[in-house]
View 1 (tube, rainbow, N blue to C red):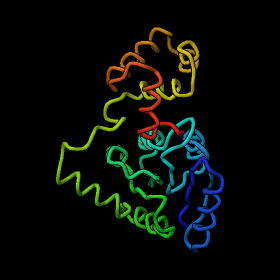
View 2: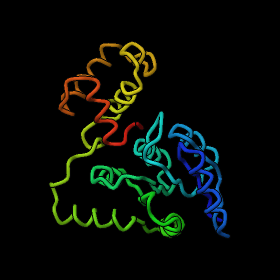
View 3: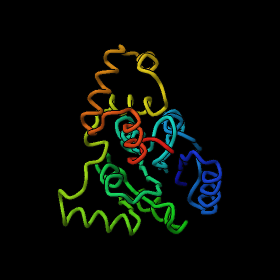
View 4: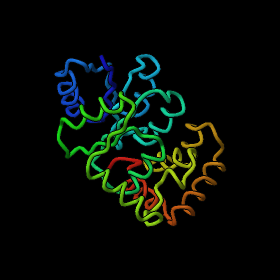
Length: 213
């Protein structure tokens, strides 16, 4: 049996995926998670073979969760599930080592195909995503850099909390750093992203899937 952890912040999506996967004789759902932090907690105990990871989740997004999974559990196969076929998402996913990338508007059986393919040691990308990858290879340098290529891990943590409406003092307490350090990260974020206001930082985070609307 192939054990799978399903992560999506919508309960109805998780239930649908569970029913779909458990209708197959060789697949079993070892657990469910509604955000990235729950994924990291559950993975340490259940050690699934495959994690199906929604890109846009609260608290810790799918791409950031993928990055941490690659560092702590490189043997686990990770398939990203997303509504986004934007080049910056795909570029970031590949750079972070995703084994698969399945679009939510595709056929339901794609998820099953992707799981079996990555467990065999291969990879699976929805046709639209695969075409985008080929296009990027044919025209290198034309794709805008994604958030994971220009922002540090700490900067992304600060960006998440700014988007959540936390003040510099609150962010400092949560991340166990000084308020001046938070302000320095915020200044660096604005410089890298090319904005001048916190509201524009939030728009950037939304556009790149770091936070949900």
